[in-house]
Image (tube, rainbow, N blue to C red; front, side):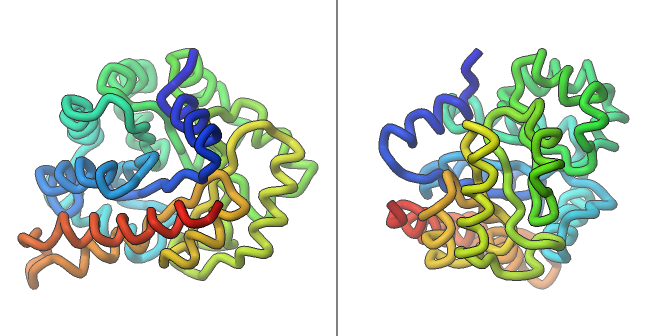
Length: 274
């Protein structure tokens, strides 16, 4: 079965360019505005969209994405409403791959089988679940693959050659390489080090390798995309959204444009890489 993610990376390979992968938080700063932000991203050049699932204890996320999740939760966002956002997005876009990124707790509470069924019918293409290691593949990863969803795994600077085969065993769609040791937004990616890491991972898999964490500018995105199959930007986009809010943390007329304008500049950086 070919997913939208598989199809998109196959097309990008034909075009000899890297993917621009965006991350935004579902429901930030409110469900209606978040939907408009997601709708704007493909027009701004996003090839793949990662949609954060709001959660109260996001261990891999830095202050910006933590704050985005809390804004979304305060605005009443839930996993059910996140799937409703995907459903609304799909009414106007049946091509752009959508990946839900988050933690296992909300999915577990929702019920794995029900969640996978609802996610698939809503138009979700893949999952990144940060806190489920390969040893727990039977919990969600294998059922997700059987349901026709890609399960995208994180590899990090501490994932050595001995550990890598376990990480890659049931991974599909693409491999997400975390370029820094730490949380999102905490440091800048070193393109030379990242290039070496991408080459090492590619010796173990034919899957595309996308790099995230620490990419904030068009120049950084271009440098990363020169070696990787995709550059992932999240914190910078979330910060652009936050900077557009009023003193009460509410959306303004500038909010959607603030995210879209930065995405457009970042996409141009990625496209200039090859």
